[in-house]
Length: 147
Image (tube, rainbow, N blue to C red; front, side, top):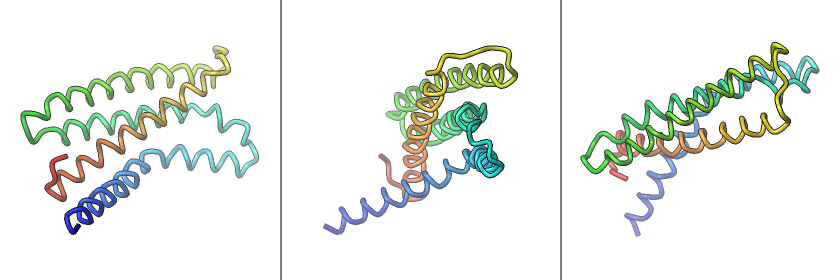
């Protein structure tokens, strides 16, 4: 029973710390959105090019952490390659979305209505994957627990 409680404590600690650390990469975009809301331009928040930038930032963070998290054992190579592949795909898609968002903000192109949904989905997947990898990194580095 003691082992189960210790495992739950380690997982909970690493998950909370991972959410805390990953959330800092979203702080500039959240601050910009709050300012837009406060100056009563909240209709612009949903189309903010910063959401795609935040997605790019999160996938960059995930790539860095996945290389660090999966370096301990020879069996980690497959996990490292999979996490790096997901990061590279996320970076590529986020880069394209960021470019299109900037072009839309400048009025150069008109994008379909579902464009913002794609950006938000990409941001959510990046956030979840990044938390997952960061949690594994914290468990390995600070608790000596190989997951």
